[in-house]
Amino acid sequence: MSNPNRVRLRAVVCCAALVLSPVIAGAQQADKAAEKPAKTAADRFGTRPILTDAQWQKLDAAVDRGLVFIAKQQSLDGSFPTEASGQPAVTALCVIAFLSRGHIPNEGPYGKQLVRALDYVLDAQALDGTLMVQRVDRIGIAHFEGNYNHAISGLMLGEAYGMAPATHQERMRTAIDLALRLTRQQQTRPKRNPRERGGWRYMRRFGVSDSDLSVTAWELMFLRSARNAEFDVPKEWIDEGMNYVRQTFSTDEGAFRYGLQGEDDYVSRGMAGAGIVALALGGDHNTDVAKKAGDYILRNGFERYNRSRHNEDRYHYSAYYCGQAMFQLGGDYWFNFFPGFLDVLAKNQNSDGSWAAESNMNDSKYGNVYSTALAVLALTPPYQLLPIYQR
Image 1 (cartoon, rainbow, N blue to C red):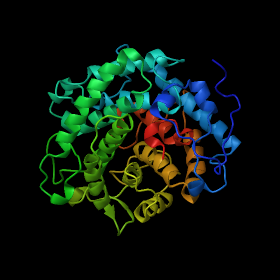
Image 2: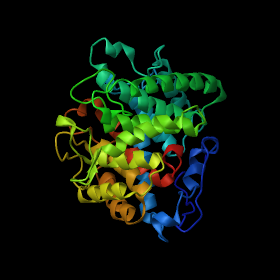
Image 3: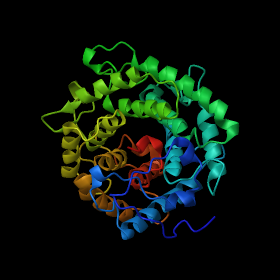
Image 4: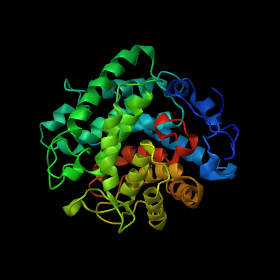
């Protein structure tokens, strides 16, 4: 393995777009991936490099230190530590973080660890296709995290499918097919409010809403990832989800709402980013509502590290979505957002490579491996190695 910090070619934005298929992406070693110019598009970035050489160096250092920390935390069973109800989603997020830097299962410095993590996620699947640690459900609380666990784990399997060793291909294919069936069942459950059709929420009915943008965005990412990997995902499934996403936009606040009614009718940085990403995955790039949500993110930035703007605003979760969203928007949205965002995250990274656990009391229980994985994923859009986040 050569030095991952060696000088790599930097692409200016006027260069032709570099498009990776999942198979090609899976064939790259992490050190070679680090050399690859980020995917660019003249219509989004003009003629400016997406990062300066100094910013690339800062980015590489922060991401690599974060991954070193995550790798050291892996348990013997292949999982990465968190609250039990957050499994296997947190383990899946950690895997995605490694993939986003070009590390792949069974190859390179983290290859064997990634295979063990893959096995942990696959072992968590129930006979009905649900990707969730079943023992938690007997406590009666896992239905809140159930579809998060399911969708995030499905997303990871979709992204890793073209990169996984041949010994895992058939098992992963079966797991993804079963998970897609469960996702569709959850999507088509009866909704009390017709406007919520096409969305997802918790495993069981709770509160006034039967759909919310937070769960829906993850499920749409799973569907899009599986479709990119050539699984059978009918377009209507995605279209129905997109119809729900569009309805969550608040014209009054210029951003996307968590839900459509009652206490769920609020906007946050995370939902602003989630809405932009969800629209982009469905082909709605740089729409007026996406740009307005981008303006909202610029007005409500991340300068105050790990600070919530209200009880339902989560810093690292929001950072994850907004990093992806602003890359999708490109142009001034990117240049006015990412350099300062990178500075804040790099400055607040701990000496061991971690970032602090989420300050929001509802998410602090998931620990600092969870927040570190989200921070890494918030920073890695410039690499453009994960098919799901390529435009």
